[in-house]
Image 1: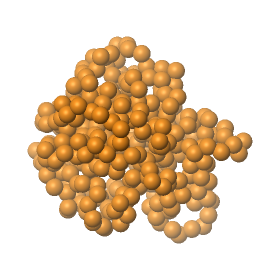
Image 2: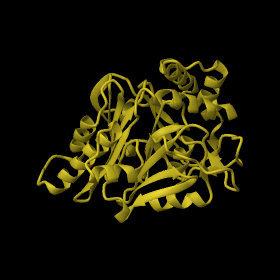
Image 3: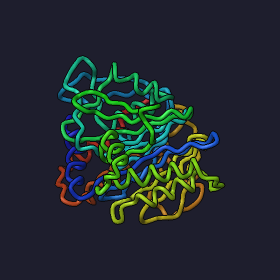
Length: 345
């Protein structure tokens, strides 16, 4: 299992030279809240999974840290590509949203007394255990993000309207929130660089352009007297910052009503997932949905029981479509089989 981290590292590292990955933002107006995410990558293969509360879990066995064990407090719905329990992002039943993006400048903490979590499992840990941004930030005292080659940063938001960027710079967590977060958006540059470039109108860069465009549209929506629904406008922003050929998933989380809206590049019909359509009790069955099915509208009832064999197939397909990767079968199996060991606590 220790090699699993290296597998995910290779997948990310190979891709970054071909695409600058992902744009996120948070938008609030008149008590309504939405969180948008474009997932830009080589492949759009993936699934949406429900994750139950009351599950006993443990962290990957990493070379530089202790094992962390916990029992999930909250159910969640996540977007997964390299296997269940290692999400790209998602929302839990309390309305906490966590999403990640590539950041080349990331420098993770060195080994210390805190157990370490890989960049993807850290997302699942936060959704399992926390309801607010404050709670997420507090975990830095007890848990660290660890990686040897997957430089990421995060945008997080909750149903109370709190939002923050989380970056790992110089081995420490750097947070922007409240008055240090004039625009609730993030692409693939540090937040400080993005804000400075926007102030100086220096945005002749893919990441900085997307950040600037997203921020401008966020500001326009807040100031304009528009009746356009928040979710629809969020998709307008995602369309504006999309990268043709690389934007595989466009996702809007409705934090107020606990719904998830999404489109995929090869199935552009809008789909809706209602969080309250699922039973997140540990005694129930986890559910799953192939992201690239040809459906539209509310798909909550089209989820099927999670199947470990289908999960393994998805992982293998995702790696196969990650052009240039040569990952051994046993490592692909390790990713796909990991969720099988997660049981009710």
